[in-house]
Length: 185
Image 1 (cartoon, helix red, strand yellow):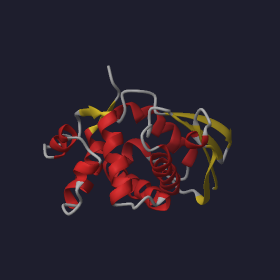
Image 2: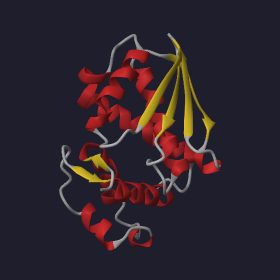
Image 3: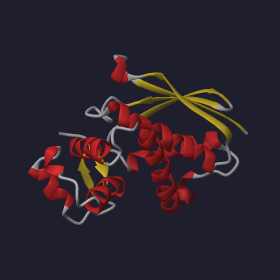
Image 4: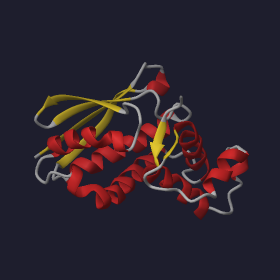
């Protein structure tokens, strides 16, 4: 059985496709995928990760014009939206590390597979291994989006001077993508 992503995240991609009516999405997305974007997306329902990846790749090409910085910024904006929905469950003001730990605990609400592996390197430093399942079709774009998401998440928790960079990139031949996230309290 395939992997799935929750509608609360899937809806961001569907909304982007719906808003960009002038784009010929059929160049990148199958008729079945396009049909799914016309349906009501329920936040609590599960949607195929493969479709999510294809939609993301198409959005990256057509809307983002292949710009990795735009993908990172999209991740930041996505966390702002999700933080409004889940702030009580995730954000621990003044503790970025506890916020990351809480996010990890509730990540099963968004994915039906293990999406991230956190390794604490110190009070203000975490290594994040990204599941190879994410962004298999557009690894660079999707992992830049994830980098932006985690960067914004720790900022919302009160982190200052956040540094987020890749120490390993799957799209450059490494087995997994790894993000090094550090900050000052």
